[in-house]
Length: 348
Image 1 (cartoon, rainbow, N blue to C red):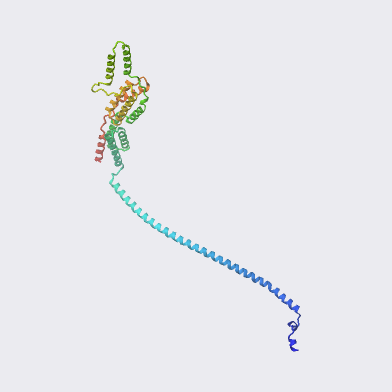
Image 2 (tube, rainbow, N blue to C red):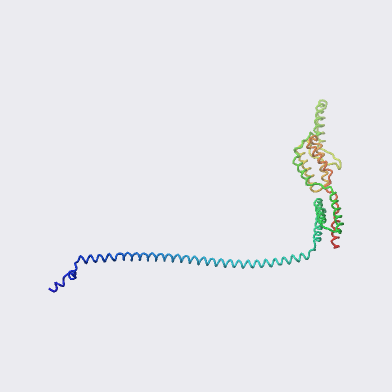
């Protein structure tokens, strides 16, 4: 009987109904549900914060590594710059020492040179007079010598002092002597002769007198052909051909073209060769050969070319003027100016 009482359900022992107890349990579960949600939210926030902190730590670590690399690069660059500055300091020091050595050398040279503007001017005048003497004696260059003398005179004109008057007078006298020399423009003559060589084949050639004489002789022969016998006619023709091949010249006579005048090509080539000889004589200042060539050219032009043509007449007039030229005129002695200058410099 006792066991039956003990085996009763708890609900019956507590004295409360089962429905009330179930309702109480449901209320308790609904009270804990917000707490569960809040706990889950906190956990999510903690996880997100951990991930964020981890990423931020990684970013900070990378930035620190980059900063360290940049710092190392900057230190290497600073070390390189310091090394270059050290090298530059050495170069500057060496250049400064070399500059000091150059200054000392320049000072020594200045001490060795003649002092004063007048001494420098006299040295310049002496140099110009030496140039004038050398150009005149060695190169026969009158124009350059005259220019050097005039420059020396202008340099002395800028200097004052009555002691320089005799020197200036001597230089002026030598300048006047140079101006009195009849100089020839050899370059211009050579250019003119070269142009004549190019135009030699354009000159009109007249019919030679020998050809005219042969024509008249042929007419006479045809007229007298009926009276002469055949063998006499053959002998006459042979004798005339033989005389045309043999030319007798007197001693000292100007040489003439070796080719027959009717051969125009060879005549033009001979004319060109003689013009080239005249041009070479001009460049070599050979007056004798120039005159010989011009005489031969004038003789050829008068014999074989049309002297009524304006171009031929112009060339003949020019050649006649060139025949009177002296390519090596007598040169004055200008050494007195240099001797007078050196005598004045020794007196100082």
